[in-house]
Amino acid sequence: MALLQAPVGSTVEDRVAAYDWPAIMKELDGFGCAILPKLLSAEQCRAMAALYPDESHFRSRVIMGRHGFGKGEYRYFRYPLPDLVGDLRTAIYPHLADLANRWNERMAAGQRYPADHAAYLAQCREAGQTRPTPLMLQYGPGDYNCLHQDLYGDLVFPIQIAILLSEPGEDFTGGEFILTEQRPRMQSRAEVVPLRQGDAVAFAVHNRPVQGTRGSYRVNMRHGVSRLRSGQRHTVGISFHDAP
Image 1: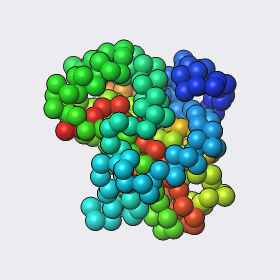
Image 2: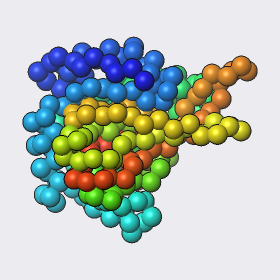
Image 3: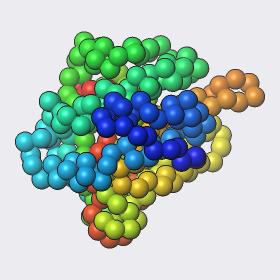
């Protein structure tokens, strides 16, 4: 996986627009994931992680071990989202919508996505999906996240974002972001994504198309986090669809 150049910009919109999106699309199409380096500054990461203990920002808390999801915990943000999370969701979505539509066409899926995120959220509301899905995850020593897919309701946007808020080697050790890809009648392929503080990874939520000798075929994607060896790790996850 290529490490794409970090953007320069003072606002969220400027930084998102400054990425080489054709190169990001090529990475996503080829491997199911792409790194967006330094999407957030260290100061923004620390400020975001500091929100976690404040319940007023969140609608629910999930202890992973109670549900067999792994070990650790996460909280779903409530509406209105923190400005930074909402701005990222709005700014990144249009860059991914075209690829999402091309993926669905290649997989013969009927869903099509509007270019504007507000229009897509309106579709979610019409389908009864009104609860925000962005969340923050917290891991301590020995915690991990089992391989899974973040599917909420009938409408699912096929690409999502995870942003690492902590610095590997300083705030924590271990805790690598992992993707697996299951192809028909083949062994699963694993990808470990090297992230630094402030980096984001865009990745396939569920299925993505792969070009074969007889046309495109569908592969199944899962993601998770390996066992934390020490310290504490915070991540923000941004899905672009809402939940029922």
